[in-house]
Image (cartoon, rainbow, N blue to C red; front, side, top):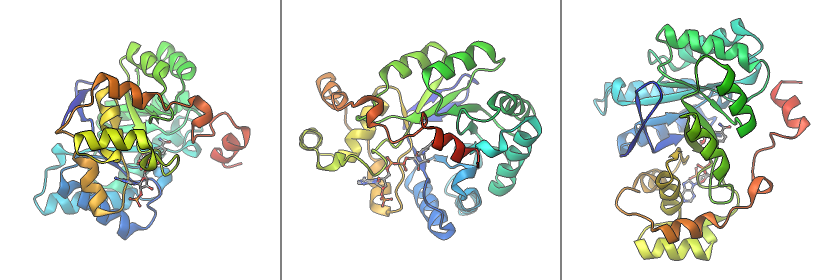
Length: 285
Ligand SMILES: NC(=O)c1ccc[n+]([C@@H]2O[C@H](COP(=O)([O-])OP(=O)(O)OC[C@H]3O[C@@H](n4cnc5c(N)ncnc54)[C@H](OP(=O)(O)O)[C@@H]3O)[C@@H](O)[C@H]2O)c1
């Protein structure tokens, strides 16, 4: 495993396990338990995924079974937009995540979107961090202009910005801007999130073949090699194991460039952040 150091001084694993769109509690708990047993130490959930309780149950079960200690794990969750109306709502949202997870503290907590009153919510996150509830705090889906304004004016700089990052949406300029502020980039949908069919791409397949790896492993390795934390999701045991096995090969500079050449820019993005209907939907309107 490789680690990246956050602006808090803590280290974060560069490969973790995501649980978006795993609403079934038993399926989520089993997948997270399997991931921890396989070696994953970073788990990524969110209030909006409605599975924080299942993630917490898996973590407690893994610790009880002696697979790892709480300190070895790095658990992330996210504050949803409807809990970001003001300072008190945000604090209540943080406490709600902590209660559902029931694992003592969170290693990283993110503002899920730059929506609602994310400035007041950030002040609550800063206080929760000072109180020891959250070890590190960060943001998600903060585009370069929004992140820049935030970093320039807020007292505490986000440790992490979790955004969509894969070969079809490489966001090189956004990564450069994060680096300027010491914000660690984390990729959501590192395998394309079920879109784009990277697994059928001849170019990706031939690079994978050269290294005796799968296309999924190549995509994850590509992001890690450019300094991006990845959190692939799968509910299939064989894929959970496959996605963890990316540490025994290295992509050449030429292969890195060939992969990045798939970039389509924002039009290739899965996100709808610039669409008014998406904003209204997130706000619960
Ligand atoms: N902050 C945000 O706004 C945000 C947004 C989206 C996601 N996320 C986080 O990022 C995590 C990852 O993103 P994601 O779940 O959207 O997409 P992803 O990890 O890129 O892709 C997951 C999809 O790929 C399939 N898959 C997984 N491993 C595979 C493999 N080795 N070969 C072929 N297919 C494979 C999965 O299917 P199976 O499960 O059937 O294997 C699933 O359909 C999420 O789980 C969540 O934690 C955050």
